[in-house]
Amino acid sequence: MERWIQNKEAFPYIKQLPNFCVMCCIENMLKYHGCKKFNQKELLGLLRPGEVPGFKEFRKLLSEILPEFSFVLKESKQADNDTPEKAFKNIKATLDEGIPVAVSFKPRDQNGNPVSQGAHIKVAVAYDDTHIKFFEPEPDYVDFTDYDINNFKLWVNADHHLLIIKKQ
Image (cartoon, rainbow, N blue to C red; front, side):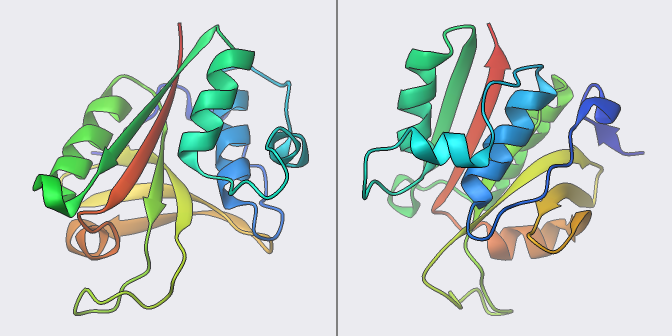
């Protein structure tokens, strides 16, 4: 049986603007919690010119602007012996609290080798014993994607990031 975020009907399902996956996921998560202050373009506008839009940058900025929320960043590095299993455990625990989780994916092939330089951000919204379900914010469509646990472990290698937004 799938365990969903607390109120799946409240998840806004906003489409991503091209190359705005971080901002789109943050906008969806904030709106899930009832904060309608920022859209994707406004979030990008908070950054200094040339600043890369990542979880670290937004965590710092939004913590100052939105004190009614906590922005928890969980970074895992291969050197720290973190594993995709730990990421899955953290995601499940947060989903069990009813809170969606933004996850940084680095595309990989079947052997676990990186297939591109960048990463993509998706929001975990549900799981069961064998799958994890993500909100897939793309410019052309909005949908959910199920990953079996083994596929998830390929995509989320030991170097991954999780962003959790909670109401204080």
